[in-house]
Image (cartoon, rainbow over all chains, first blue to last red; front, side, top):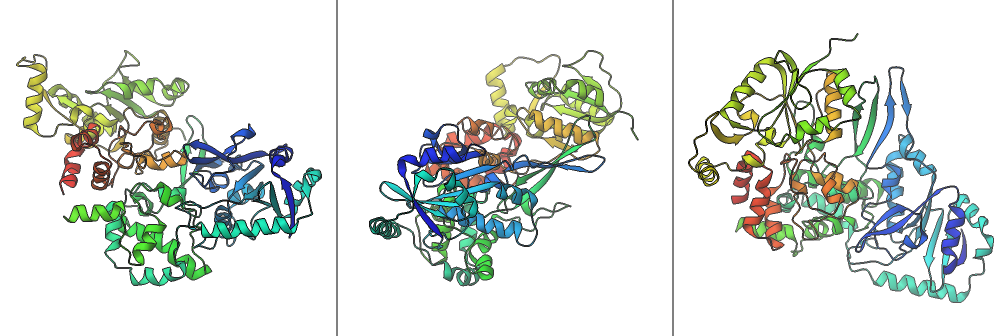
Length: 353
Length: 257
């Protein structure tokens, strides 16, 4: 793999040069300390110091709602209008891992054309980051990235070390060859190693994910699930913000006074009551506790058993989103037998009082 | 292949007439609507209304007078399908929030005194399914434009309308909003039927519950969560009751638990 160096002050000029024929999407502050990947028109909007976006990059590959095709009496017309040419800049390692997991779901057995088309049309430009109290990517081993990007920018003091991960990434570099320095000094390497060590020490969360499949099995009937179910607001937000949740629903939208219908698709979530409802009104997982158990079985057990790593990339979005403190961190700690000060734990004490 | 046009009637009982107004406000589609169906009765839109047999009756408003009951019974007799449109019709509306009959009588007296009503007798406001069988429900206060057009088109094609089984939070996250509840703001998103597009939260205003209670909402958890965030007991219960109509009776049982 080729690694080059870019002066920090040249970053935006470089992004401007390569995004002439594609949309540039990058992290922008949307609320105080809350970010979102947005279409960039003004480079000063880009926030290089963001920690996580509210929604993960999956929103650009399979938007929350979009039309798949127009059904007519003659057949159907596919609609790929979401799959415009994009450059997605500022993706952190956890989110790149999230996309690699989505690739597995949407490309490895059956190819989902809506996902694949958008994936092919998007360049991934990664960016290094610093953990906050919700980041768990060191535990999930997704703080390091070896594939899944076209370029990856590691921040040093005055420069970025730029990893070139694909031929398309290399093509980008060639647009502005003068910006890139192939001479990486020993000093640069020392700065990078020091940064990496300090970053690794900055993680505040440590979860043993290797033990999770066994713990899930051992605690499958544990009262903890009822406690979580009592508190869960069944809002589906944990699934919507999760970079690896990929379930969807298909909806017909008939058009007034036409013989055509738009066939749309929207994100769905197994944590919602309607998800497991079938024709006739039966529901396989009517109880919130059952639905949470399914979600966590998927994240912490089934995927690990099959692929040797969790379907959680440690981004911490569930932790920064759930209003009642149900997230990978608190559930994993509860499975480890820890008694924590969380809303769901306090509620259980309040209700049984 | 084309059948006769569906005969449709749009009726208003007790309410603000906002749902009927919303249908009228579908200005770009209004010609299409009137072309696609035979609108037999729509008091707000036309004067030559016929009270005959109907394929579909859309009923807005709650039942709050004896005259409402008579009108509703007559509509049910004439219509193949009855659809409750809007929150008043579905759960009794804001005016349906007092469930205890004694409390309702006291409140009535406080507002109107000992006045004798001459043309009809007022009764406690109730949803229309307290009196008749309802085939479909369209939530909202008022209903939404896109929701109505989708419903209307589906009915024209003989398809049942879409349900709204998901809470407001789902569309709220689709729009990448920050969670207000998490930030300590009294937001009823998790307890409220979605379909509105989370329009209030998109503008940084909390959900007040105007699409009515969502199936399977966890009222107990949200109640304790709001208490823990420092909200007054009465304020929480009032906010929760505001748009829940007679449904609050079931919910209150959950809260006392």
